[in-house]
Length: 308
Image (cartoon, rainbow, N blue to C red; front, side):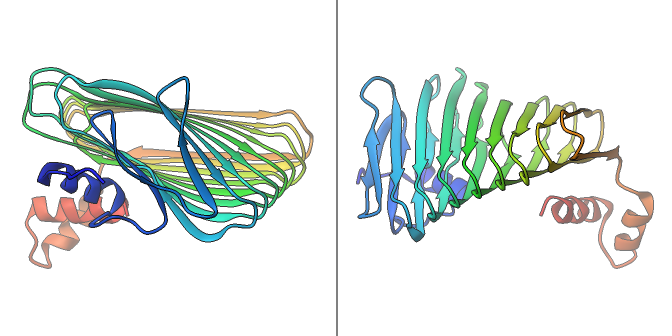
């Protein structure tokens, strides 16, 4: 494995909770190069022959194994586009940890665009964690544009944790999913923007089989002059159930736009959307301040609890 400097190690800790080389299968990417890779008997990681990216193949029946594929960028001005495809065999049950950290101390923009495509076999289960983080004192932006495609066979399930809390100047996240009969998708998005940051997040989910279900919940905080847009569309094309929820705190001069869309194409499609955008309640602040916290400490306590 390539030797990483202190900044690269810190980024890996932030986005993947890695303090050492992970057990199981992994591919660590640093400044557009592979910093280390390991396959296992049940999980094979290979480079794509035609474009930058990976093919990750998980054998049917694989249980209690993990795949780590974090990306770190520390060179100002570096821009890359990566395609990673995950083929998850029938009855497999695995954890996949991705994410990208950018430290930009220069004057040029640094950008990572990643397309992740998931193909889940019958009754497969995946827990997917994707964290984005930015740091560095340079004037160049930290830009992350993740695209995710999910194709779910009958009875499969996927839990997605999408987190972006600090330092990303501009992001455009797009997620699409197609679910067969009995498939289940759960998404938990946590997002905070500050300064003049911009964050766009869109989900388009098609429930194509009987008994398919989707539950998409986004919690976000917009501070300073930042802007967020959350779009969620669920199409019910069979007897199914779908739920989307946007729960946001707006502060300072922040702006938030929530765009729900529900499309029922079957009489037994049960679809629900909830949205709430508002400021921190004054009584919450007062209650914490009576316990000895300053106004700023109380505010941070409320935000931390909200984004947990």
